[in-house]
Length: 525
Image (cartoon, rainbow, N blue to C red; front, top):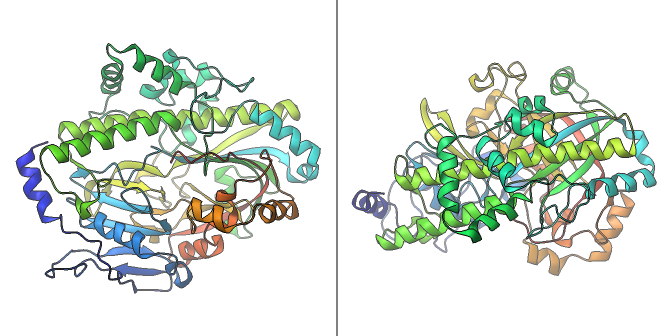
């Protein structure tokens, strides 16, 4: 980075925007509002430019607390940022709120991508009648078959302890992180090659648009250090696993919305009414977290070395101007993490299908879609190229969007996969033209209303477990993780109502959980 240029630019934006006075949300519609940033904090008034767009009805606006909104303001006032959108699932995050969109044509920001690079959702449609899943013994057999292949839990060990998992060595791992879901990688891992066509992005290249820069980046990471080579090999063993915290696998009963448009979209998506499906939430596991952590520390050292002030004095809001060596390094690392996350999801879906086929021979399954919610992508915003950072936010391109040309979804818009909670259900949606308001983005789920520690202190484990029994939802956990209990999350109906009322997306199908694969360890996103 050029320290002189960056210092002068950063000092303009370094005012502490975390005052004790509350931020002002100004409703602009039944489910929309703006958050002005031109008179925030102590000291002289100044113009903050375009206000923050907020997607939230009255009930959801009450969940947007001051710390979350202050993080959003810090992000909006940061160098090079032109737009910030707050979605209804927004809550306090790392540097920027989880559930936000940040746009910059000139800078890249690790915080508004997140620690778990390319944390994502995927949905596998099966031809199993949902009625068959009333049998608890069958569900328990499916749970056992799945966890033998796709382990849960954060930390070391990966898939070594899952007897029927795919074994991924360092050689294959290098191909995965540099090629993504290439035909060769998928074939060698036993994943249907055609599933790559059902991915938001099946592969990512480096800052220069090639995979060569990614291989060079890994070579530099591993150079002359046997310990790093062992660490890389260990991270690659996590391919095909869920991780901990809010990550999950969930068997669903698909119910398509009763409308002509929903049925038409469902047909394009490959959704089958009254059949089972499998919804997965996970990301780049320890590999992505390691890359992100290293980037944060490297950029923080640069800011300290050059005495550059941070937006809102927040060490988690480091950034790099595009075209600098630091920005190139981050884009390369983000691509390496994103490629792992893509293949991780596709492999998990192949293993889940294999588990169903072991218990129910002859079962068929097809990937509906794979879509990320912790990534920065180069898109056109306000008629110019810009990096759209989505952190706990998911892409929402409607029918006719130029980016969907030559995809199966050009005439309908792509599937949007929104997890709620096992008891409230999840949703498959499709974007409306009104999604332009949110830079073609929507929330990635319900969003937390309680911190993990608050949930553990407030909620009763026995009541949580009894609620799952009443709903006839099975789990692989002896006790459902209390910090992941449904009451720890926002009301999913209010969240969906905000999206629909704001005109961003409409519902295609509702997914009702029949069993959940979960782990109680600390989240790695």
